[in-house]
Picture 1: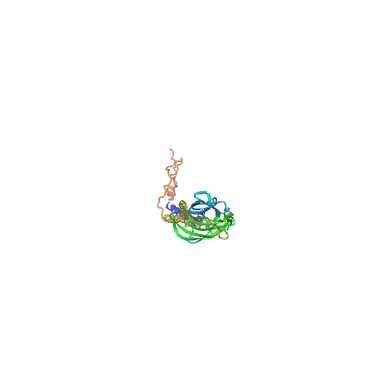
Picture 2: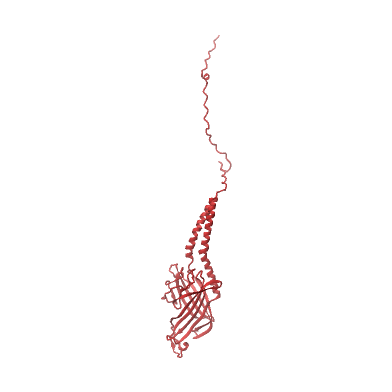
Length: 365
């Protein structure tokens, strides 16, 4: 019995030792990837902001602006290529006191490699409906579970250009050690404004309507969980203006310092912790546990298999009688083997071999 158990443990040990590299190098590569169906809503807030109210044709100052960013994955947009994820992002900036009057709305679609997070140009990528854009670098995510302390090229959808996201320091965000990256978007012309604005609004003496262009400058800061590549906090310091082509007239359209709310920071940290646990399970815990169980199985099984089986043999089963019941029966008779040769008959003596004489009949009187 001990030998059988030992052989069984040796087989299980070999199985777990084979399972460990399979989980680490194959299953982990299939699991540690960006999801296809991501859905996340993030809120940002900026007190003491300034923006131009188009409805009232008035510049409002010292107001609180809110931004709602919604990221939604389109699982069917990759045309069956599961190595590519397609996400849609929409950001709505509005006045907290007047939420029905949006200050700015921006939407874009990105497609990226699920393992490396590098952007690819396919699957209908666009910025505000412009499908002629060419995206490069990284988008909403840095490398999955492989964030380093270095600079990364990150695509900015507002200016439609790539700018370096520079590593700054390691800082705590709700108890999580995150990498802080900063990106500076220089003053960039983003496009002409269809409507002409009065010169007085642009700081000019003449009141004639002027043709203007929109310009944007921003400082983007993101805190990233290095274990997963998930951003846990954002800060967007933006300044958007309109200017006349000659540069004489200028007006602020929006100026805000948007920061992720505390509640959404906690949600992002919880998401990062849960994702990091899943990554550690397939990269460390399951392979390590499989190696440990495999070695223990081989060791214990080898010791039991090499030892003597001291268990007594099982008792013989009671024989079945001719009537079908179990019980004692007399053992069958075994034929006796002749150990000695049969004794030969003694030959009769000579006297015995002599014929008896014939008796003569008595004479008659």
